[in-house]
Length: 71
Image (cartoon, rainbow, N blue to C red):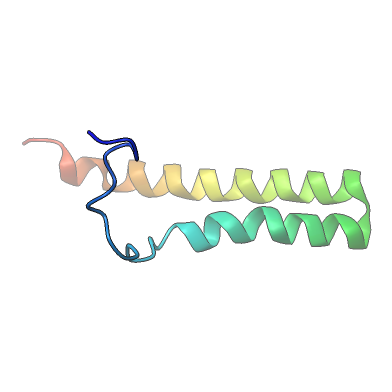
């Protein structure tokens, strides 16, 4: 490992990961929303959005869980 932390051979840019854009858009849009409607309302709506997304993800995992378990 060299002084650059072992990244000297990493030349060029890596491809953009698909999750980075939505992960960055949520807090940025929450900031704009908070500017428009106020901090407490914007934070509440941001929390409700995260809750809805996490419940949808949990439902998708539980729905497909039976297909993953061995017979």
